[in-house]
Structures are given as C-alpha cells and as structure tokens.
Length: 235
Image 1 (cartoon, rainbow, N blue to C red):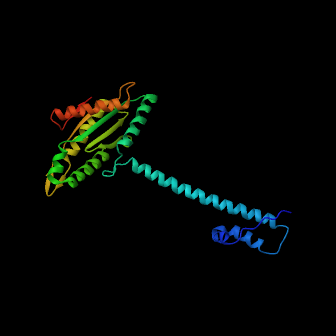
Image 2: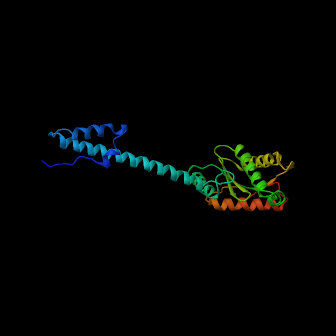
Image 3: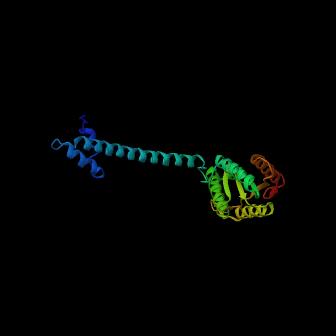
C-alpha cells in the first residue's frame, strides 16, 4: 500500500486553531497507533487543508475586489465636491444615450457655470471659492431627482442629465436650480455673496451622438454668458 505522509511540522501548526477543528482531529488520529485507516485519514486531512486554503484565497479575492471597487469609485468622483467627475459623466451620458435609442423617451443635457467665479477667488481666496462650489454642489444635488445625474464637469462648471424630460420641463428645472443658487445664504467674512449661474440646455436629437448634444448645450451656455449671464439659453 502506498504511504502518504501526514501534514506535520510548522506548516500544520498554523492550521491548528478552533476554526480548523476537523483537521486537528484528523491529525491527532494520524499521530496515534498505525491502523489501516491512516491512508484514508491522511487524504481527508489534505482535503480539509486544501479547502481551508481555498477559503483563504476566496477571502483575499473578496478583499481585493472591494479595494478595486473603491478605487474605481474614487476615479469617478470629484474630490472637492464629492460629485461624479467628468469621466463618470461621459460614461453616464453614453449609457443614457444608448437607453434612449433602445427604449425611446426624451433626454435633456444641461451645462451650468458659476458667473464671475474668478472674482470670488481673487477677492476672498481659493478656500472661499472651494466653499462656494461645495455649497452649489449640495444645493443642486438636493433639488434633482434620483433618476437625474449631476457631475462637476470641471472648474466651476456642472453638467446635468435629465432623462424622460421634455425641453419645457427641463428649462423649468434648470431655471429653478439657478434661482435656488442665487437665493442661497452664502457668507464669507461676514459678508453675503450673491452667486448666480448661467446655463445652456439641449435636447438629445434622433441619431445624434450624445457628445454633439453636449456641445450644443455648451454653446448655449456661452450664449447665455454673452447675453448678460444669470440666464438660461437653449441649444
């Protein structure tokens, strides 16, 4: 009969804890008098040992998966505001566009920009500008639906997706957001600042790439800036 060497020594000692009780009992039996069951017991011990190693591998994979997911979330999140960033926006735009192509429905894209933001930084410092952006992000997020998507597109620009929304309703939503920001009680050094925003809105057209709709919304935003700011223009 072939002889199978039992698991002994330092490698085995690390396994002899309460959660490996079955393996411990098998090893104890192997250390007893030689019997015809030693070979079977040794095989069982090795199986238990391998199962334990497999469980450890699964746990390590789960931890690594959790780390990877966290890193992915961080890669899609704007550090300052906690909103999705431009990369996340581009992914969601592609998904929303594809959904409209398959299932129909209207989709509005809006670009919103803080008016004269440089003046805040110049007059009160970048910390005040950062504070203003965080406040604006909270206000915008609190007044949008769960199905809407808000991102910090860059600098003082925010991008908004309004699915299943017509242009008239979309215009009303964006105008309300701008009014909310203007009425916000933002104070710095005991002085209340009046912050306004300009915005551009465009509807996804049939067979139009989402990025082209975004460009139309962006052109409408700059039209609003040239027309005096603190207003919404349609693209």
